Amino acid sequence: MMNLQTQYLGFELKHPIIAGASPLPDDLDKVRALEDGGIAAITMYSLFEEQITQNIVGSEAHIGNYENSFSEAASYFPEVDLLERGVDVYLDQVQKVKAAVDVPVIGSLNGTREGEWVNYASLIESAGADALELNLYFLPTEMEESAAELEDRCIRIVQAVDARIQVPLAVKISPFFTALPHFAKRLAAAGADSLVCFNRFYQPDIDVDELDIRPMIDLSHSQELRLRLRWLAFLSGRIDTQLVVSGGVHNGIDVAKALMAGADAVQIVSSLLINGPEQVKSMLDELCKWMEKKGYNSIDELRGCMNYLRCPDPEALERANYMRVLKSWRV
Ligand SMILES: Cc1cc2nc3c(=O)[nH]c(=O)nc-3n(C[C@H](O)[C@H](O)[C@H](O)COP(=O)(O)O)c2cc1C
Image (cartoon, protein in one colour):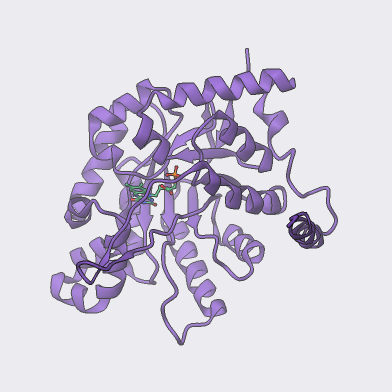
């Protein structure tokens, strides 16, 4: 019997496959179906800073201050009705999801500016969330804000959120930081117990018939995993947080690759939306078969076996690799 047990954010999970933040927890039947399908933990969809700010200061001030970031968020997530609902509805749903299942439930808070909204971290905890994921989803659109200032702001937000909760904190980030390993290390020191790598950016297209911007949400493909594998391999064993892959995990082999690169767990969303909760079992079957074939008995043996730790200078290796890849092309 294969041992797939995984420790994540202090929980003993039966295996490493978690439902990432998605609209699924809005429907309690879907939540129960996820648990019946064997999912190890469930992440809520996000409560957005913009929703909270609206709650605090009223809609007029909200629209003036947050117009740009809100439209960005709205184009990111098409579930506008989820966004329009208030904070109370969110907290209520956390409570209901928690009551509906036995697996750990992770709340999700999504914001990028400093402000009172961070206080809502403790309300999500009080509503019953076993852990909190803070999503720092943003695009750097300010001409005057430097990379260092932007990172400092993120760090202060993580510290502020961490100070308000007792439960473990995961931080979901994008891959687009100038010096990701250094920033990741700072996030760990600021209180992140886990890094969720990475956000996917939803890139609006231009509609040439309507002469308008068209918000686009495409589900992911396995190819997107490679960006995550690369960075996890660099971070694994070198920073003091757990690491989770979000983005491009679609089958059991993808899970194996993520673990080998150093993931403590994986999150899946697109794959669940496409295939339904039964997908968890088929991923686990495929993972176990592969592990058996390769002689692994537990995922602890597997975890991090392909990370860059044994290499004294990963950057040089990566650059040499780049050169080799380019030179391997034959015309
Ligand atoms: C319809 C939809 C809604 C999502 N809602 C959220 C959200 O509320 N908060 C969040 O942090 N991520 C959200 N995400 C992003 C996912 O959690 C995940 O990071 C992304 O889909 C990549 O994982 P995947 O390749 O398994 O889909 C959403 C994704 C989709 C497709």
